[in-house]
Amino acid sequence: EMGNIQGEFKAKDLSINAGISHVLNERMTGGVLVQYVQSTLETYSSNGLLFDTGLTYKSEDGLNHYALVLRGVGFQLSRYYDGDDVGKMPVDLQLGFSKRLQYVPFRISILFHDLNRWDLRYKSPLDEESSIDFGGEEPNEPSAFGESVDNFFKHLTFGGEFLIGKKEGFMLRLGYNHQRHQELSVVNLRSLAGFSAGVGVNVKSFILDYGFEVYHQAGSTKHIGIRVNLNDLKKKQIVD
Image (cartoon, rainbow, N blue to C red; front, side, top):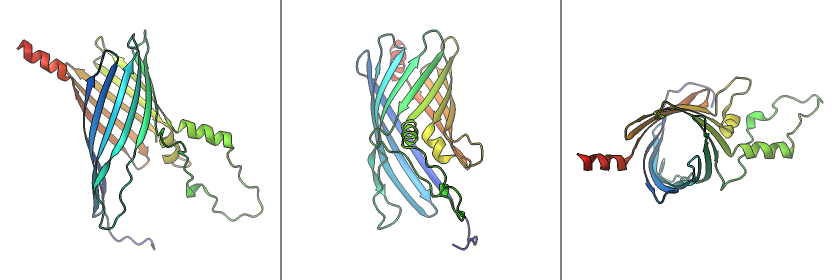
């Protein structure tokens, strides 16, 4: 409380995911993802299980894809301490669209997230004026229209993917999350908060993905994923 240093402690978040998808017909694919999540703050820790499920639909020419996803449905296995309130699950209903350009090896995607929670605006107490008012003019409040436009774009995440090579075996990805950029940027400092990038490598039946996201000046998150085409593995076993 008085600013005295009393020691150090660590905080850590962990998520381990495993998922599977299945082709329902020539146009539709369904999938489910199971996540074990753990949060540790000093000597307090909590963990839980989350489930994601979704459907994708592709156009006849295969260039356009549409997706409907429900994320974050689950339950808490243990609380931070005895008597702690039950954790609220981060349920998120999403609608996605991606388009592969016909003559250019590039795919653009738009994700509409938090459809179940429209108002994403957050008013930080740091934005309030703390100086003494000597009769100066009050700062202009943002218009209702401006706030509505800002709130709309906070629901959107934009992405782009370059497909490199004859067999498109190397993928370079870029992304932008407007909500994250608006809420986690530092005032008067240039920030990459909300921006993300990654690469993917396709080797036979395996796809290795790596990505990182900038959340704040204090740090970023990194992701590693492996995707396996089980149908290709089955075919190889039959041939052998």
